[in-house]
Length: 472
Image (tube, rainbow, N blue to C red; front, side, top):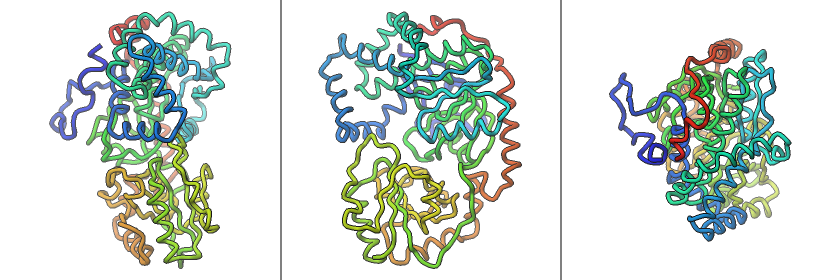
C-alpha cells in the first residue's frame, strides 16, 4: 500500500537530477501506482484544498454529501461510500469504441472535448472511439458487466479504501479511488479490443485520463496527450507527462514540463485553439471584457466595474463567467442597475473576444485565447486572489500586469504589446501565431501517426490480479 500512498511522487522544486542525467526514481511510463500518485498529489495540494473548502461553503449538495460522509465513520460506511462513488464513475463512462476503432479517447469537460476533436481532425483516416462521462450512460445495458466486475474485485479493493478514509477527507479520497475505478474499467476495455492501438487523453492529472493512460500502457498501447489549457509555470503541482506522444500549444509548454516536472514524450506542436490574429488596436475603448476564473472575488469585481464606470460611463462591459459553476459564486448583483454591463456564461469565446477592445483577466489561461484572438490583455492578480503570476505569463513578458484600472490603461497596453520581441514570446506559447497553419498541421499529424499506427513494444502485464499488490 505504501507504494501507492506513501512518499512523494513529484520532487520538490529544484530537486532533480543534474542536467542531462535521468533520475531513476522518477517513472518513465504510466502504471496504476503512478496514476494514483498523480491524482493524490494534485487532489491533496493546497490549491485544491482551498477549492474544496469553497465548494462546501457555496454548494449545498456537496456540503451535504461531505457531512454525511463525516458522520458515517471510517470503520465500514466511509469505505462503502467510496466504493459506491467508484461504481458511479464506472457506469458513467460511454460509449465505448466499436470494432473498427484504432484508438480510444477520454474527455470530460468542454475544453477537453475540443482538444480531442482537434487531435481527431489531424488524422481523419483514423477511427477514434470517443468515451465521455455522463449520467445518461448509466442506463446502458452494457454497464451490468462493469458493475459485476467491480463487485468481483471488491475484496481486493476494500483494504485500499480503508487506507484512503484514514488518510484523506471525502473529496480527495473519492478522486483517488476513482483513478483505480477508471483504470480497472479501461484495462478491461483494452483487453477486449485488441484493435485499439492508442489512448488519447486531454489531461495529465484527472482520474479518468491517467486511469486510461495507465491501462493503455499496461496493455502495450501507446498514449497520446494534449494539454487542454495553458500549463501554469508557477503552479503548486505540475504533473508529469509520461505519454509516448504529446501535442502541445507551443515550446513554452515543453519547457515548463521539463523544468518543473517531467516529459518523456515525443513532442509535436498544434498551437492554441481558434484562429490566431495579429493584435488589433482601436481608436477608443467602447467595450471592455472582464473574463473570470472560478475563484473570482465578487467584491473585487464590483469595485473594478465601479472604477471603470467613473472613467468610461457609457462603455459596454462584458463580464464572462467561468464555465465551471460548482462554486456557485453569487454574481446576481452584477449589472442589475447598469444596463451597459452584461453578465454572460457559455457564449462562444471567440465571439466575445472579438466584441471587446481589451480584456481584463486574473490568473486564467483564457488570457492566451484573448491574445491569440488579437486583443490586448491587462492582468489583474487581485481579481481572484490566486498567487501572483501563477501561469508565468508576467515573468515571460507575455502579458502586461496592472495594479488596477487607470485612465491611461489602453496606452500602456499599446506600449507593451507593440514592443519589439513580444511576437516572439507569443509564438513560444502559441506555435500557430504567425505560422503556416497547413505546414503546422502536417507536421503534427506526422508525429501522431507514428504512435497511432504502431503498437508499443511493452508487453501486457497479465490480468488485473497482477496489480493487486497496489491495492492490497
